[in-house]
Amino acid sequence: MPDPPKYSYTANSILSAYNTIARSRRYEQGTPLALSIADVNAYCELYEPPVERYVFNTVIFDLDNQFIDESRK
View (cartoon, rainbow, N blue to C red):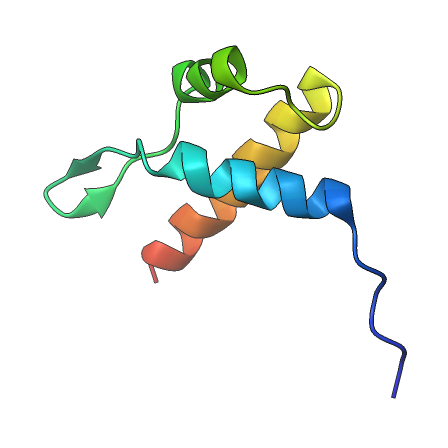
């Protein structure tokens, strides 16, 4: 059995940020809509991203794409 991964403060911060940003998600007829750059910008106006902004945006949108894909199954 492989050793568990080491705790990552950066990963924890990004996941926490995603959960906060996702609270602003809009729905249309019960279907979740993708997060917009405005949602991410609103978060970044209040909080400092834990990584460079282009990395933060990429990770947030990748996490959101995974959520959207899972919700459509």
